[in-house]
Length: 328
Image (spheres, helix red, strand yellow):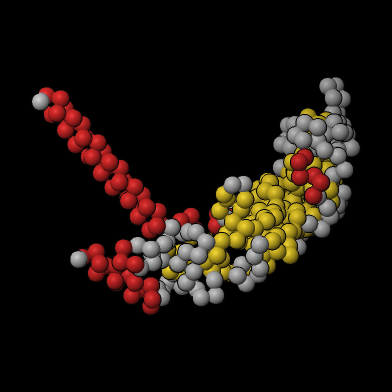
């Protein structure tokens, strides 16, 4: 009798386990069908909400970001003719001077000997771009008292890391931003490139000339430089995050002509700049590519494209029907 009870209990346990496994398998099948955009309860097909964009041929502009300093294109240091002590300075930073203007006076006297003051003259017309030395400073004939420059013609001196040196050439364009005018962009062109790489900083200096003179730009300002180095063109361009990678291959989902289904297409990508990627093969310019919601799609999935913010009538009716089914 005891053996029969044990046998019956074992049978009940086995049946219970089998029932649980059957229910789990049924749920997995249901989940897979609905998540893949296939048939859901009621025989209806679930549409995946997506957004799309039209792939167009665009040029990607690769660039290098660096810092620079605004300087005068032509400037000259001012040196005294005699050594001694500065007794008077007649200019300050920003003073406009003409060629021959008196910059400072030097007292060349020595202990026990008195000499007349020696005047220091500006060798060119321009503007004082470096603060002159103060009275009382001792100088020699190799001591620069100040710098005179032409502030009507300014340039940007910038250093480019060695790994980008191969892309440098005369004529490259750049956007310049200044801290004083954060919402303004000034354009400039590479006019000179240093023939050597600095062995300490591992950079090469470039000189950029402003495309237009602007009185708001001052010598001595700090500049943020975006130097455009290479152009990649000739192929459709899409957002990098809409590309799906499976098994080492890259795919996108193209919206079919009916506007309600998609096709999965294998693509070959090219260059990427700022999260935009070239597509060298697999799609053509003018195709609508899914850019949101693509992770849950499969080939042939139904979609509800809300790119324009308006639901399609068929999708709206389907949503209403699904809502009714849920209330039953």
